[in-house]
Image (cartoon, rainbow, N blue to C red; front, side, top):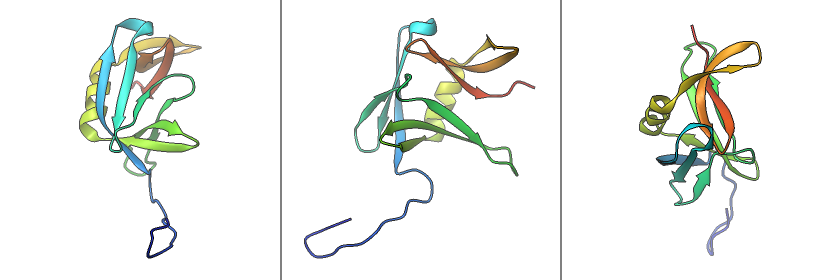
Length: 114
């Protein structure tokens, strides 16, 4: 980071952005899921901007992210993730049934089914 008075490095522990709002347009595989970040950027989940959910190996807690640009991700806030889960559905993917969401004809798994 460079300011007129200083210059320094910033290290980000998790993700540099937060996804603070979700907008849904349409339904089914063609629906569009658009996220607004805390920097007022709009990112639509698609092939170039995938959703992913990392799971903590100890607690099993999910950490959902969307790729914003250039390898930089936004972590979905809890209310946004809950809204996303409400949109989820079971789909047959390969040999398994997965739980996830559709956006721009891409299926994004949100977690494993028990």
